[in-house]
Length: 385
Image (cartoon, rainbow, N blue to C red; front, top):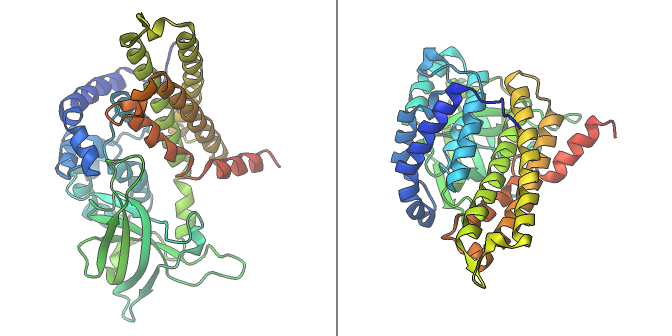
């Protein structure tokens, strides 16, 4: 079926990005994988390519393109090559929407130049040890000074993607106790400079997948945060966190579909090259049937992801629709990647093969951004159940 979601400009960007990945990422990726982190200098190269500024308004040094389609192409092309761009995805996909929606003109003038150039990498810190998805239960506090000049931040965060390389982190903290009838009240967002006294990066967490994406524990001990760095209104942070969820979940859905498509490509290439009993593995009926079934599922996932992408760009994607796209695409990816790994045999279990890394990377899709179980609850509620 003819695909209509991307135009000529998008495809030109795709060609440029594919060439960049082949030249600047693939040759170094094994080294990054073993180190468990992407070198910070690489982010400067992404910035030179214009990756960080696509959706940033022109007045702040960006291209001013209000579309998620360029991000979608990045999901497709990195998956196709079996690589990732480390923690930089959080910089753009998660942090930028909060900055653009909540930042004042003065804040954006101060922060956006470094954001676009890659000199100031952003991360976002929500999850805390012991609270998991229950953000209303967070214990990190930010108490305003008597003169109103600054806040004093204390607490800890975990599972912070990009936390090692970050220069500024959007930190969620309690500025007031929860109300009896609203435990979500009292949370605020702050842009915190990682060079601040009392700010500490703890362990770089050892994950089974997304190895090149640095994920860290953070702690704050009497960290002074200027009042200027309050993002949005005080005590309204929880409502802000929900505003970006449809885009975040679509991003996960799109990435999952792209991973499934890449898995089929890897399996097809491998089975055409590998011989068993004197015949190409691809020539066996079981291989053909497995790949055909996987391709059909990828086609369906692509249709769902593309439709949701169009809805997001049109400002029409609902939380329930985003949840549905995420649930479907991540479940499809899980099944397809598993079946494609099986076609690799023992080599599919070796990290030197992209299908093995893809298998581990994709597992988190059904956890972060809201688990599959949470997605089902959202969808069920939209059905009136």
